[in-house]
Image (cartoon, rainbow, N blue to C red; front, side):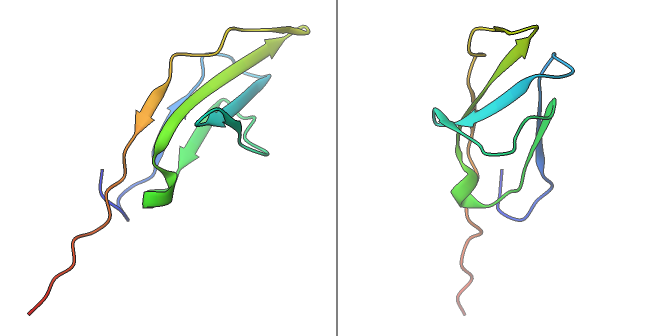
Amino acid sequence: MCEGTAAIALTSSAGAGNQWYKNGSLIVGATLPTLNITTAPGNSGSYTVISTVSGCASLVSVATSVTINPLPLVTR
């Protein structure tokens, strides 16, 4: 994926109780079923989610690797 293209959407199968992580670190405020990632190179990484329902947390999801490449420089 290249920088500045459409956002990337990752979706949990759980409708509530989600917490998203990037490279193993909690993403503050990322608790909706869908995580929208803007296409900036700094957002490249490994994304996972843990869902908690009735006080019981799921296992960590399988990681999704996101790579966002910077736009190439054009020289004349």
